[in-house]
Image (cartoon, rainbow, N blue to C red; front, side, top):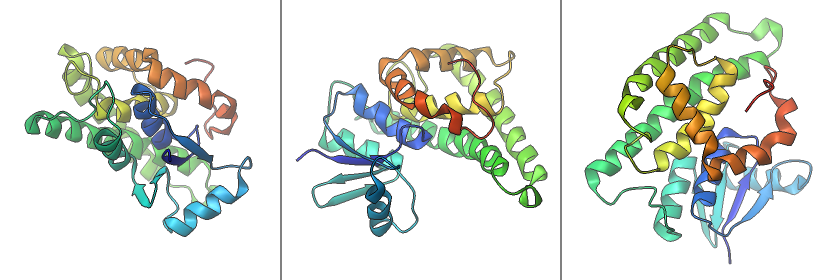
Length: 219
């Protein structure tokens, strides 16, 4: 049996896992979380009451959280691209950057987006400004880090870059990466050119009208 991914192509965390799958050409099946497969979401909720995705099902094994899914794939479905280095210190650096992109790019980005879909009386302008300030701070730190490297954890594409790709993709739509962050902008461009992530982006194009802030006419 092939592993099954419960996902939606427009989700940033699903794109993170899809990038890892495409990077290594891993065979898998998809349960689409949408009207195409109405029972998929019900099945997901029965397995994972917090109702977050993606989830990977591999036989009797249920794997939650995008970073853990990628680690599981790296262990059980290895391919030509080693997404978690064998060296302990290098692996720690990769995991650190993975958490950076999830916590300090994706989380504040999504806070701005989720605020936009709330009823007007429930919106949180103070929280949105905090999120935008966090993004600027994260862009600044990342710009210094990327000044002398190709990928987030060095010269090799890794879990960290799987996290970075959708995080920076949507962050730039939500809170533009300014010209002063030239290294971040160049890194985002490299990620968009990576065939694995480019495929995930192309698969999500039909859903761009769903973006609450309005998808820009680029990328």
